[in-house]
Image (cartoon, rainbow, N blue to C red; front, top):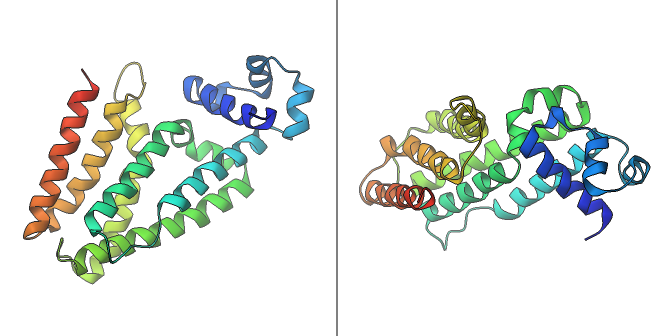
Length: 215
């Protein structure tokens, strides 16, 4: 692994363990056993590191959040999207924990983040529309955008919410599966016919995964 990639991966680990605000470039360099000057050869400052981390996050989602395929079950594609998103939230949860502060310090990153989130909102609308056309859910067209916003809100702020609700404030794997359950719950009131039984089957799947992860 190159020094540049080591810096990125070490930064992610330290940010997740101690919080982004508590970690400086000196901490990152010391953890790697390199000089601050060596770190600055690869990155101008901590904001530069954060931009590269966000690029990794964005590229992962772009790769896994493809246009809906008519040849695959829409609900299964939704779950695949949710798995990818919550997996990233597990890997980069520091970013969600301190999102407003991180974005307030870097206008370039904020601009990139807002543009990407607009794209994700459009994709969420596409998925919901696909679920409707596949008769998995029954929802008025006028409500699709609001449901897409609720899905994004739940995804974006689930991990910070969990961390504020417990004394140690640490995420566990079961929290990620529980987040997926919360999103499925948003769709359940709109489900119809076989769609309802499919959503319930998925809920049971993730409940089992939660129980197994806690053993």
